[in-house]
Length: 230
Length: 273
Image 1: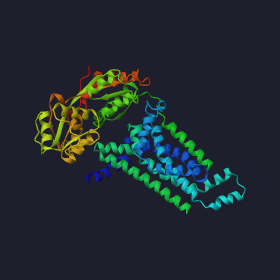
Image 2 (image 1 turned 180 degrees about the vertical axis):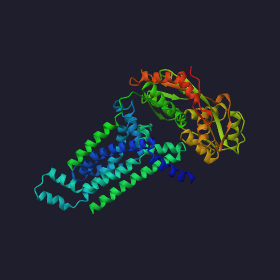
Image 3 (image 1 turned 60 degrees about the vertical axis):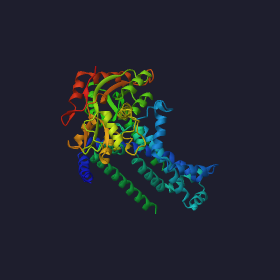
Image 4 (image 1 turned 120 degrees about the horizontal axis):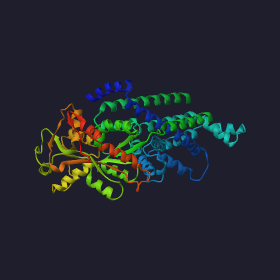
């Protein structure tokens, strides 16, 4: 138990003294998660929307696929992305292995099904009368779509927050694709894994606290959105 | 909604730009956990950058994976310690050449109570006793240089390589993490001396695990640097890798390696030719 208390004390020291290594990991995490989240929202939200309102053959199968992908293990994504990004892989020429955008690409894949599935659910849950009202008011299909998305905006943001929570705390992709390179691709989670392996529990606890704080912010955001939706 | 979207796109673009690598030259290295965990690289990499302007980035993995990364052209240079595998790597055309840089030695460590009674034994007698008494033995089990060496020792001792035996625990983790498992389980393990000294220093010089077996000739542990062959990987930065190897072998860096001490003990001994 000693190391937890000791870690906690040293953690505050590291955080408030502006320890460059700790803050580098925080900054890498923030950057890669932000890119990943933007990616999964930009692709996932329209995809989820299509899944819920468009009529096409195989829609049920597509929904099933997206829902299944919710359970995609991060190490599997890490492995697949690694295989694609390694210089002997199909996308090796892009030089994305061991970079923040490379990690973010993998993490975006993790967030994508979450955003898509939750968006689809939210749009389906909208009152059908909204659609009918829009149609009665003479809206064209594009306007109906935008109107529906607008109505579902808080739900989509909530989906984004959920995805963010998963992305920010993920370790498999960050480790495999990022390579845990100090100052460059060492994230909060890969740093915790490394420091714990080295027996440096204080640093691990410090970084864990940052993650916890991030989770708190995300949850406060989610709670606020839920109130707005109610 | 559109405004929000375009803002998101703009924010993403800015972030991507911010994430783009700086224009300074950088050298990507795959290395073993021992050079990283002991803090040696943290000590010398900034000097390398200061003297040459080249930024050294490294990912610390087992030697097996490091060699694989070299084969796949994912790194420019290797700093590893498994001579037979390294020679094969160079002979197969994946590495341009191999240059010895420094060494330390392997030691078998175990709990002070020494349940198998191996203290002061030679390697073969110690391994026989451990197998005989079914004393817990922690193996890296990760195809690292240390793991390859350990497997080699079981073979040289004329014993089969243990695998599923209850007393033989394979962690699949780095050296310091494996030492910690040995500590928790009161077992023996084999480690390089550098990592053991680092571990002792973390325990304020009074670690629960002591050195049981050392000094046997077979425990010699050579570290070498290998630039990735440009013929195999046209994008590998061979010139920078060569510069790095020369720098490692230079008198001043060799001295710096010798001076890298914890608890007053040298972790690595320079021997570049």
